[in-house]
Amino acid sequence: MAYKIWDEVGEADEERDTVLLELEEERLKVYTRKVNKAKECRTKLQRDIAIGKKEISNICASIGHQNPVHHHLKLGGNLKEELETIKPLLDDMRTRKVDRISQFAGVLDQIQKISNEIVDLKEQSGNEGLVDENNLSLSRLEELQRELHKLQIDKINRLNQVQDHLNTINSLCTVLGEDLKEIVCRIHPTLDDPNGAKDVSNNTIARLADQIESLKELKIERMQKIKGLATALLELWHLMDTPVDEKEMFQNVTSQIAASEHEITEPNVLSIKSIQNVRTRTLF
Image 1: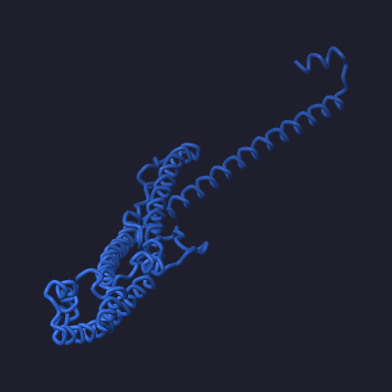
Image 2: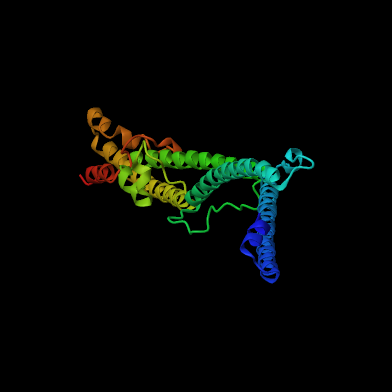
C-alpha cells in the first residue's frame, strides 16, 4: 500500500529507505518496551510469590503448622496461576496466626494479672504480657496454659488462706471486743467487702498473719489480767460472803480461771470494758 502511494507521488528511493528505517526503529522500540514490561511483570510476580511463600513459611514455623504450599501448587503452572494459588493460602495462614496470637494474649494477660495480684504490683510495664510471635506453637500455648492453671490454683489457695486468717481474726476480735472492720481495713480495704474480690498478695497475707500473732499475744495478756482479777474476786466473795445472784453476774469471768487460751471463746469476755468491770468490782 505504501509503495503504491510512493509510486504515485514519485517518492525517491532514498526517502523511501529513510521512512522504512524509521518504521523499523519504531517497531523495535515498541517491541523492546513490550518485552521490558513483560519482564517487569514477571519479576514482580516472582517477587510477590517469593514474599508470599516466605511469609507462609515463617507463619508455619511460628505456629508449628505444616507448610501447605507444596500440596496446592500445580506442576507446570504459570506465575499468575501460582500467585493466585498462594494468595488464599497466605490469607488463611495470616488468619490462623492472628487467632493464635489472640489465644496467647488471653493466657498471658491472665498470667500477668494473677502474678501482679500475688506480688501486689499496681501497674504493669509496657513489655509485660507481650506475645513472642516467633514461637506460637501449640506446645508453647499448652505450656502457658499449664502455668496459668497453677497460678489459678495458687490464687484459690491464697483466697482460702486469707479467709482462714480473717475467720481467726474475727474470732479473736469477738473475744477481745476489738473492732474487726477497723483492723482488717488497716491491712487492706478489700478485706472488709464480703462480696468483693479480696487482695491475696504476699504482703497482705503476711500482715494478716502478723495481726493474728499480735491479737493472740493481746489475748494471752488479757487472760492473765482477767485470771488475776477473777482470783481476787473469788477471794473477795469468800471474805464478804457474797450472795449467789451477785456471783452469777461475773460467772463468765470466774469460769475462765482454769481455761486454756483456745477454750476462751465467749464474746467480749476479754474486752477492755469487761476487765474494767471486774477490776472495779474488786476495789469494793
